[in-house]
Length: 174
Image (cartoon, rainbow, N blue to C red; front, side):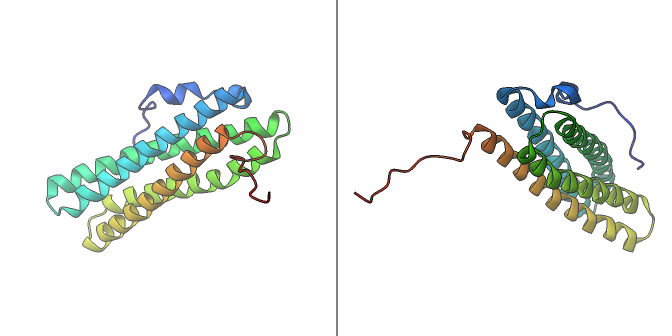
């Protein structure tokens, strides 16, 4: 079940031009939301692949394999878009805080793509041991997808906070 090069599965991908990624705060929040939505879509695909491959039935295993192939494409696109975001931040006005926030997301996205790709590869092989390895790699990809989705959700929340942090709490000193 080789991963096929397909166009993005939704229009969100088209809303991420590199030059616009450092636009206004509301645009940035929307871009974080879009990336987060796609990470959740990827998490759902890996979760479904995990479910179907664990069922043991041959047709379910094939369904799980196709879902994992889909996850590979989604992961590749998401990693490329996070890379584009990082490049846009680097080329734009200096924003060290944003650049620092994007760096671990890039790492996680590329780890996720590698795990999904490896899982897809091992699921295609004929031996039981190879398919078991593929199943374990699906679980690894699912864990990474869950973490990436949560981290992108955190970016949406942090982009809503005013400069200097969250809520102000009145002091009880008086």
